[in-house]
Length: 365
Image (cartoon, rainbow, N blue to C red; front, side, top):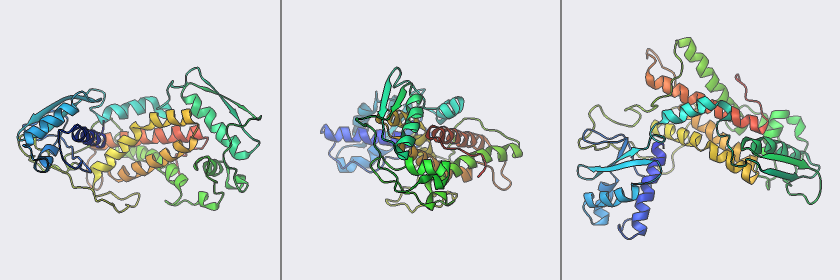
């Protein structure tokens, strides 16, 4: 469970307390969760009870105890302890506690991370028209359904049960990779665009971003080898990432990180954002969601959902790449090795996803 996921879990606990009549407050937009300070315990702490106490008209300790009951027993949460004036300290279970576990799982699996058996033994019959887009979608579904243990049988007969909106022009002029992306990225009910935009090597082109992100993760591994270090799954967060000073607050008081703007300005792909901990959490959450996306794409026959997910992975990893390698006179640290492992994990997901769509994932671009 990443900090972003835990923040949502805390907000769900607040919502349950409100729905149950235990608290009379407006559910906030965000719950800040960071490592606990001295006097705290567990993996993360939040001061949301102190934030809600005044509008709720109850003491912070009382609010914290209400939320503790709703958090205890939640999937991924091993223990919840209230310390100090009302700080909630959360211990995650062994599977959810560490980003390193997720990264290690992805690196061990490689491009087949997310493959499962949700459709084991099932035969999916696809009846399609004689149309190039239908053929490409069916071809991708053969691999996607196969990744979940199922098998696809494709036939050209009535009644048709897979009829995506046909392409308005011949996609072959785009080349094999761009043509497949142009046909697979839109939802089946949307008309695909067969334009040269799919060949432009700029951020405006989603296919370029996905393939470029994969190539950059491969380049980082080569660059790290030149600097004399390799990846090692570990904690990708540092105190600076989380906005923690050298001496955290007492009684487990978490030091809030800078709040996100309601409408954050889009950052260029290779510039560090002002909230790097959010960038890391977004990438971890997106990678952790990959098995669910694959299973859903197979069950609902929607390769477009996998394509859009890959764009999300690419955008998330591009945001963290500038902090993977040491800069200037900086020496490689455990954080650099852990972030390199995270980048390599993202690269494996991108390569595996593109392979299921039948699209090449180049090491150089």
